[in-house]
Every structure is written in C-alpha cells, then in structure tokens.
Image (cartoon, rainbow, N blue to C red; front, side, top):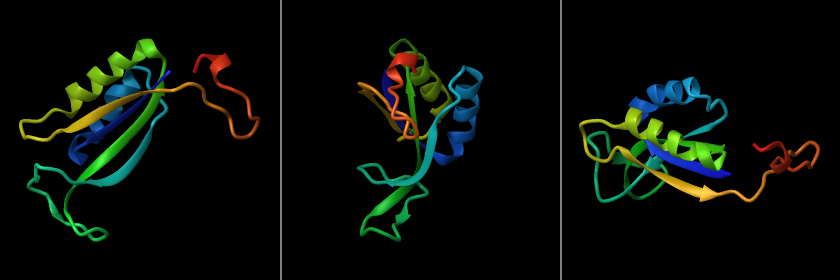
Length: 112
C-alpha cells in the first residue's frame, strides 16, 4: 500500500477531489494548512500562529494499492496545475499495514 500526501492550492482542491472521486479514490482526508518556503504566493500573509510569512494550502491524504498510486499522482498533478509557480508537492510513502480501531483487524487481509 502507498500513502499519498499532496499539498495543493486551495482554489484547485474541488477539481482535484472530483477527479479523484470519479476515478475510484473515494476515501481521503483534507486539512487546511499553512505552507512556507522560498516562493511566496500572491496570497501569502503573516501567519496568525507562527512568525513566518505563509501561503494557504490544502493537504490531501489518501492510501491506495501500490498499482493505483501512479494514477492518483497523475490525477492530482493534472488537476492541481496552474500557470502560476509553486502549485504544490506530492509525497509518497510505503504503508506496511493498517488496523481498524473498532476491531483491531488488519486491513492488509482485505487488500485495502
């Protein structure tokens, strides 16, 4: 299994979610976040929580089968791309296993 974390511009999130859902990626977690780096977006502003200038971003997290990861990456990239710099970044991690909280059952046996 693979975990995909993508940090994207807020104005692209709806298009990305719709494309992922249309392609069978129905379960994901979305979080509002602040990003900081060398590039300062036009929407960058002083953070209310930290002593940095930040840009608003949305973090998408999803877990999929190894063979589905490339498709998810392509969907996020195609739908998150703009004509502006700093469209975001995608991280991929290996997941050894996952467990249901209620039962303690490993999801590995279900081929999550």
